[in-house]
Image 1: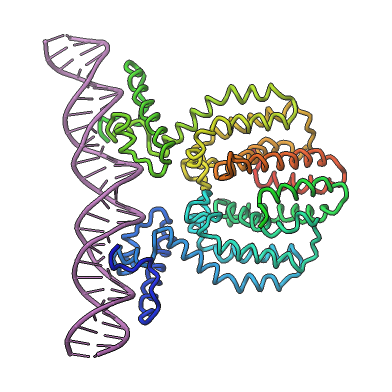
Image 2: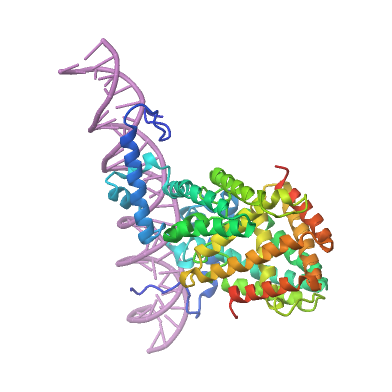
Length: 233
Length: 233
DNA sequence: CCCTCACTTTGAACACGTTCGAAAATGCAA
DNA sequence: TTGCATTTTCGAACGTGTTCAAAGTGAGGG
């Protein structure tokens, strides 16, 4: 080890203004190029050049090229927060709230659809950009909490053994919709709208039907399965 | 363009024995290293060295590092074919057949779980290794046909509007199970077994319940949705 | 025997993401 | 101001996947 700073986490004393400016400039330069020519074909050298720094500087502020996308994602999470919370207030029904959440997200990301692809591209939980990995735990949990609130005061009554998993299941569902959207080539991503409308109806119908006695064996199975796979947390 | 051969597709005259031997040697060397240290950290130079050729030769036989994994996948498909067909004959019930198919696959890949991860890691249909992409169309369609046969003479009766999609849905389901298995850290991948058993029960129960009049609105929704999303093919 | 021509093999070279030692800039206490 | 530690910047260098012009190989025809 040398005298170099350890992780790009300045010790916060003075001069934090200027360095934040630089970090911001690099991020912005990167996003412009990402949007223009895609994540893969963007070059760290080019990003650095456009931000008027040397490559090394880019790596002083961002651990890796992936980390830049991650920073974009984190910023998105912060910027979307108010709109998402507002969406919860706008409607009391689960349907309205889910429409609100997913709608807000797709709107927010609409000009960055390809870039979002860099995030959804990795299934492997060990990959730093995977939506299922450790690196994204914080964001994911905040999101799950949002769905928990969406469910909380709405009129959905579920069997006790599946209810605790509903927020996580809804998060998964939302993830699927977004994933589909990212790779949806239809004009205006019309197919995603169809998919969302259709699956949402089915979802709500399923929740309603869940209380019929006929489906009791189903609850039991589902509850046991969820407990086993998710563990106890 | 030079006098170089165009695509690694020899014109078949003489000497095809030797070149196939070389191709095989490269593939084998690569697989050994992939299994030992994973796909990512394996090096084309190392693969070439272990196969007693120069890097260039490796690229003469395989378009890319990814293409080597693809070759592994194609070989797997061929080698598994008899066992999969046998599994269909072994049982007449859908449950038995699904268990057979998934069981055979997981058994076959058990010594290459990490390597399979290189294939399942990519969601993006444009990625050459994505299970959903064009590059894997042939393999995917053969697989879907297998599920079609599995459904064909079994006793499942489904509403006419969803039945045509069942093979593709089952393929998706299987894909999900395999994906879970690839990243399943539990000892002996026990969680995957739990997941498979549980979801399979739910799946079969759903198919049974599908004929109850109560669920008619569900069929309608599902049928319309599937038609819209899958298109007409 | 040697020439031809397609097939095969070679390894230097390229662009990429990333690392790192060192220098420059900055901030602060004396 | 000076001296010193910390933060920031730099860019050459490394290992990677991949490309490509050049050279090697060998079977069949002259």
